[in-house]
Image (cartoon, rainbow, N blue to C red; front, side, top):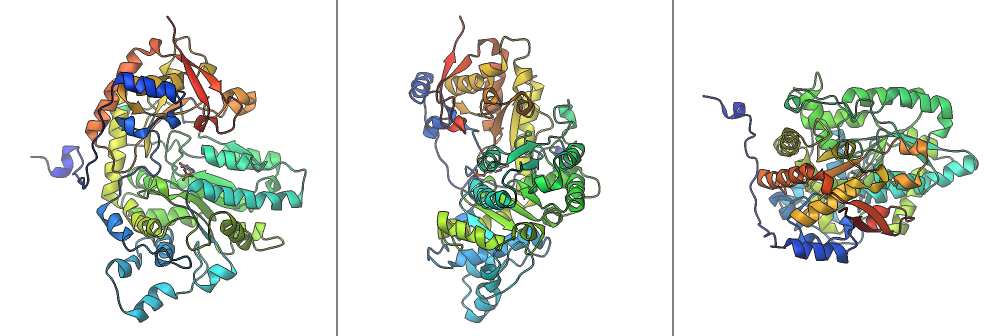
Length: 536
Ligand SMILES: *Cc1c(COP(=O)(O)O)cnc(C)c1O
């Protein structure tokens, strides 16, 4: 008899606590709602959907522990208790590896020993890592809590851009990334810096779906040759920093290997450039390293996370992509390369802190409620739980495997948080030009017929028609199905697979799409009106 682990099906690791009923909505009702909301996926009322794969952002189901921790939230304006807990949780997860302190337990357990609370939580003082504490956070700040990842990006780029311009007003600056996320790209561009994508050359290579449990080509890696080339062509002083996105959301959610991170760090060091993570899905990235990178099978997730972060000088993060419904942050190493490079006239940490206070709130809440802060602190421990991660990765992989079995062109292997369809392949041999926005036509049909929402990340979202031929090269033509943490199980996936397959088999009937309002807008996938054009 096979053991439980040999069954090839993961052991269940959770069960639902609260049930929300999905409404019965007819196709005619969805059609009417689509028309009323200009066929824009982002405008469609979520409550009218059966399944929502638009984003995994903030849409996860919280755990009982998070809900319990939420009650300990403290809405004080200055130094709420969750602030201390969150800062130490960040140190636990990103710096302490297998030796976390978990001071959060003092709060959850209702510790009443005041001296203990003062010594271990409220009045500790430390410096030298990603999170300065006590007076050091005031004299040389390096930790910035904000509501979302993009707020961290905004803080970072809007603060460094004037410093760069002051150095040389006419210089062009470039920020390379293994794949800029859309808000990252937009925040960089909004500050007149050029975002550059250096996708791995194997990204679009074929991969057999029955190999997904056995190996992984780490298609999220940064192209190291292109990185060196860019630095040498433009000059190191034109590169404010190098960014690695883990996992690489724009490149089909593919993971980045430890080896690639190390090599990028080597290049960054050689040219004395700060290296940052866009760290939203660090935990998913870590499980890929554990499962598939040589030498890491016996390492724990926390120790892999610790090693990954030992190579970078700072990171921006959206905690909404983990188990938290809201939260983000910017962190950089105390007096590291980033700090040195940008503290020309004034301490860069002080400049960032001033902007944080001006735009989001004082540093101990940064625009978040105290309840959300403490729930977030508890959630980051659970995002590095091996069983939860395995369940998450398994579900994504099953989704991709079932689509591949039905011959639907899905990017393989599956990434960490989402399944991506390759729309170039999807429409191969069919009259659908790149600026007919077939990916959008597909998402409209999927929503209309089956009540399922997905997200085009291709020529429409990345504004193909507004870009130069050179820029167009880095636009992939994808539709993404993002899977929120703990929200769905295999029955949801099976319905989605059946619906997608049905549309794929009838792909000739998928409409082209015209932009009916706001084609010139920036970030237009959030705001424009669309019109499907059906053939005869
Ligand atoms: C979601 C995301 C962001 C932005 O975070 P928000 O919390 O949505 O503002 C940045 N980078 C990546 C890779 C993301 O997935």
